[in-house]
Image (cartoon, rainbow, N blue to C red; front, side):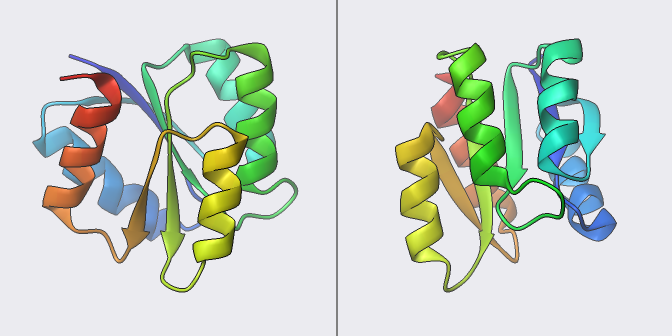
Length: 120
């Protein structure tokens, strides 16, 4: 069972993703609310995958992706974004994210992205 870190400033979004991932037989090992927490939790938990919101306080998801990829070039990160953030999605992929999923979350799309990024 793969370990996943869920990072989003909205509790409802973290809960939604956690439910989808748990149902898909993934183990959510931690939750973060901003980019700074994402980096700290990534170091502590060493998850197989991170789902990362783009727009968050203190440090956004793109900055967090850059920091995590700098420390671990093999990190597997999927960005989460609202519709209409295509420019930010491109920036996130260029920063090292492996895929993206759009809010509101489609359960099938989330699991497909996770499987693809983890090579399952």
